[in-house]
Length: 340
Image 1: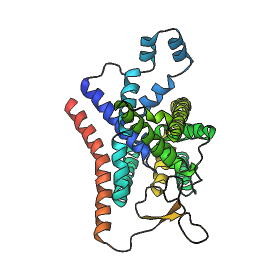
Image 2: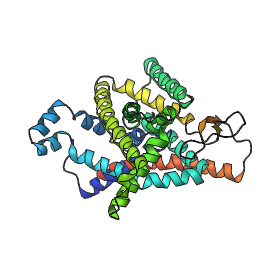
Image 3: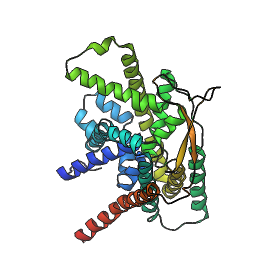
Image 4: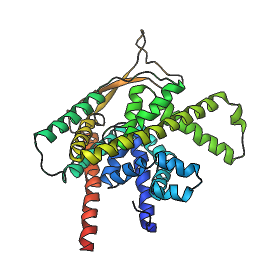
């Protein structure tokens, strides 16, 4: 673990956390892919693994400095700081871009995931039948998940806690999008839009010294939902990290093969050209949820049949997405050559 980081390294860690948080917000994109491509995936997993019985003993014994050092606290706190900042900044920008430039956003992420597959696979080494089988199983699982139909929204707190545990998999398992899992569970809008916006509005009210929100039952309910979801995410993050750390130590190449397959399979989720399917009533009218939004039941994916200006720009954004990821590899090679 690395505790003595320069100011530049610390700033980069916050930015990486920012990118990871933004990726976790987008359905089909995994924050774990960001960690993998940015080169801190294993340190992230092994740091989370340190949140164990010994760590809790250090806290209960009042040995906070030892706890901070044992859990690689500087690394985790800077990364988490970036994620928190992201949820109130980059995530808001992404929400706007997806509404107004949906095709181009999906195109850019599609390109980034394609670039990530190359980035992770290039140093894999020799492939044999066993690893190809792991790769195919990852691809099949990723594709199968991408074609599942979403459920309806459920604000039951036990279910929200479970959503937190499962959705955090996007940070620990590259290729498995936590936000897309929430769509399948029907709770994406409730947990990553409404409740986050409620927290943002609450902070804004407190800053203005306005506490009228304490008498708003809807706001209180959303804050309660967000708290339970956050607790479930924390439990899931620590649990998954222990499992993955164990697997990475004993079956590293096999795990990487499955991860590469998962990421490849997830391309179906972020395929840019798709049409929304809406829930309709007997009269053919689109159903609206409690918050006035049209209820989406899935997507129909298609290939563009003509090279319109929109299609050309979408392809350009795919290429830009690939270049963004590959530029990290070029920059890494440049830094290595400077130190030779």
